[in-house]
Image (cartoon, rainbow, N blue to C red):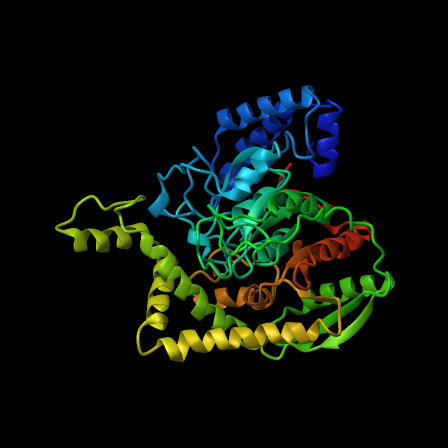
Length: 484
Ligand code: GLN
């Protein structure tokens, strides 16, 4: 069961090679065995997972199954799941039990999937190493002294160590792709608006997007079929017609024009990572792709722009945690003001407070035009760069992250160094474009990911471009030795 793809799991469930209950138990046992070391899950609920599996087995016995019936999926703890504790990695929501389902969770439930548990994450999805979680740091299964990336680090660690066949993540500035790169599997951030944000705890609403994290592009395509849906409960959900992302897997990529942005290969990129990315691009050339040199001239502004816009939106979104409505409330206080202060002082961690401070500052009267408005204008220029680039190429390739995984603690006290982890991923969030990370090699026994960026709603195409690489390479099949 360990190495089967989602499609194979589905087939074997249908053929009754094993039941969903057996499959779910298998992964729950792996979680029990390895979670102490990896800290990938915040909450497991064995009883609930097994009860879902038993229901799935009845559906299968009656012959009413769909592709996902009975398959366990780990869910990032940012998605509200009815009856499940949903913490977003924060003390603020330590004891919050969601009273409803996020649309992503509902879609998986409707498809018959099993909720395997809620995965650890940076607090409110702010971070690139999963060291800001109130529930402790997550470990990279390739080397336990290294970080798994963030903020979807629990999902990443779980997928890499096969504690789950697949997981969900969210990507505001790189939180699916950077951990996918650092842990050696496939992750996709869809076009903004393709996957509903309803019930997904908000960090920066104009950037947040949920997506699949799984060993292969084929697995991700199967997940996206379930995750993507137009949703009237999310005002930014787009009425894009339902697609089957698996049908394009298998299309020829002969003549594919790959744009290589010179800005992605400059200073700051680890030389071994660069070599791996260049080799992967050569592999595509062997498959018949052409290389086109392109430029994304404003990409150096992506990080400063993001660190104005994301904190601005976060400061607004996080104002709801006031100790009154739900979540943590301080024990002792003098009056209402004192209660607000103490609740937020005790309930939020340092990185979250840093973002709230920056966000409040850039939105304040007198600074709004100089920072927030300016950042929004540059955001448009960044989108325009991509629009121009896509006139010359079909897909853009480069590194997902500037280096392989780094040691735990190495960048924790240096926010700027940490923020640079997302230097190649953030611009696609600002533009709302879909992008993936796929395993492309190893440096010093740590995985390295290749990033693929597509035009709006080109997920089917992008997944196939990734799939073609995975048909001729084995990187995505590697499993860390330490975890058996
Ligand atoms: N690392 C980035 C940040 O800290 C992105 C996080 C994310 O994509 N959720 O904001």
